[in-house]
Amino acid sequence: MVKNIEKRGELVIQSAPQTIDDLMDWISGFSDAEGPGTTRLLYSPSWIKAQHALKEKFEELGMMVEFDAVGNLFATVAGTEQPNEVIATGSHVDTVARGGRLDGQLGIMAGYLAVKELLEKEGKPKKSLQIISMAEEEGSRFPYAFWGSKNIFGIADPKDVEDISDAQGIRFTDAMRAAGFDFLEGTPKFDRIAAFLELHIEQGNFLENTGKKVGVVNAIVGQKRYTVILKGEANHAGTTLMEYRKDTVECMAWIITQSIDKAKAEGSPLVLTFGRVEPKPNTVNVVPGETLFSIDCRHTDAQTLDRFTLEIEEDMRAIAAKMGIQIEIDKWMDEAPVPMDARIIETIESVCKDSGLSYQVMHSGAGHDSQIFAPRVPTGMIFVPSVGGISHNPAEHTEAEDIQQGVQALAETLKRLAY
Image (tube, rainbow, N blue to C red):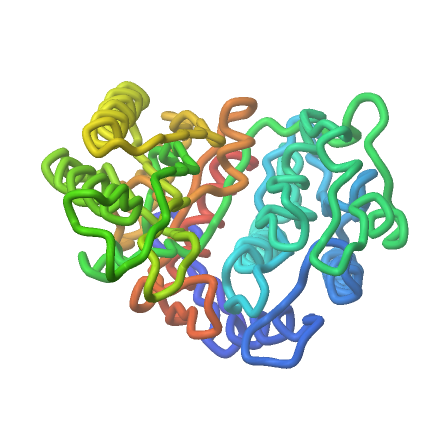
């Protein structure tokens, strides 16, 4: 049962926790693998079933529902005065393998709850309201991310996916066409979005640690990712004296220690991660002659991110040269920070204040579809807490009462923008 009440002129949603839990259980049930978790990869059988089930659910609200060329799903209520001005909300329908029950799909179902309440309480909007279930964001099946949102704006290059395959050797193009979709041709069909809102779990523990229930996101961090290869000399672990070694793991250890120390000294919101390590020959009695490792560095300020990563690049080269180690540094991701729209941030914050919601303005340390939208249309994000900061995991959880506050913030913001 879902109730509406008025409070200081604001729309207040009181969704019974069971309603939210039932919706999330329902959408999570579309999975290509037995539990734990949900596995719903781009163009898979469960992905197709989920998108068509969502289509039916949106149509039950009286919305006009269509797919675009690549499989993004759009459900729209036409505005009574400015139908070409579209206020949209939503997120991505794909999951990681054995993912949780909230990431991505919560944004779709929150949009459903918010629009349902607005239609029942306020009637039709002046501007068009739209829920988007985006085809893909995670890059879990194929080595390509943001396929859904990039196609909404016509910025996805077909050449980038024509020759890629999944782990089973199925080509991207074959999977797409088998699901009934194909490449976008010409101008995107849905190009009238005037504003976009995305509700998402935080995927971290900041809100939980601060006791806040709603995050008003002001920016998505920029990211730089590297693959670094150190080349020294493999040799016998027993007979090669320490002073004669060209040990690439030792070199990596010095790089990691110095870089992490610098990151801690720099302070938040900068984060630095060494997440992948592959020493060769990776055996107990051989000095490793080659080591590959990854670096992930993020910050909300582009200049700080550029300065810091340039410093650690120079440090790595200096350490390697001192130890007689060859070094190759491949910076394969260089994404700038993406600010959210100032007016929408202000609107969400005003909604939270007027509705008495427990909120905090914050940045996002993870990437989201909103980073594709934000440079092109006014965009805002709303976070709800992640219990224990856990995400991309079957243990992913947010209390229904916290989701309720997030949906309330979303619904009232949509009301102010569309009504």
